[in-house]
Length: 314
Ligand code: FUB
Image 1 (tube, helix red, strand yellow):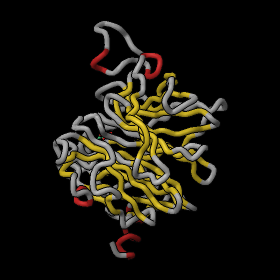
Image 2: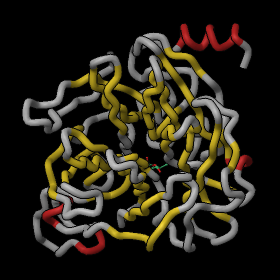
Image 3: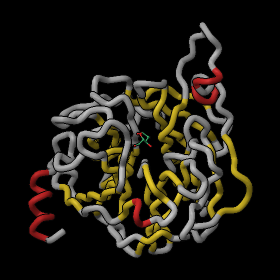
């Protein structure tokens, strides 16, 4: 995209939610780098009847008001093994390189797979780091990667629907050590078991579905996720280790009339403020398969817990 076009897009995409109004965008994943906030998104197709997504997009801002559109530095065609469903992703910096973890349908295994692309800058160009998926085994569970580097330098990768999985990444960020881990999807951990394990007639507080976002605050691990079923809301659990045991901590963004039956979140602190990113179906001609990324500023409660955050059009 030319500089002139980028400036034009920046004017069109302002602080009003949805903050990208020029494309359908989904599954926002914020990353702060220097004095800019970057947001990595999916790109929902126009007039779609499913999540037939082909590429990912990047936006950035220095003031949370004026957004720059960096186009699509990563697409299905960047991965020789991927042929469909460019779903949720997250990017992280390590040792001056940017690692973009994605999921997509794999023509090798026939299931969804986790892949990783690498770049020298937050906006690309990005290249498939491995020429094959980082993890796949033919299952459709393998979607929605989230990544975190812990205080001791250990990088954790988590993902999954309806099972939440984890791997310990090596320092190179493109290989891992140990076996695939599985979080205990218990009632205590997530407010209820996964949907297929629910007892008929029993009331549960909640349940994990997909879209995990792993973070750590004041020494406490927080796992945010899309919860409840269809439609989804956002809830979270806390733990003293990424592998658990996790403890259900409540809703963050309750069910709201957003026009999208999915929700997918990411959080970041930026220039002394905290921001919660999510998606809605609120653009004209939008909906469940035509989503748009949105953001709310919020303040953590005094004990470090999340407040309730409601979607706004501001
Ligand atoms: O964007 C496709 C899928 O919809 C994501 O992988 C899920 O988290 C849901 O938002």
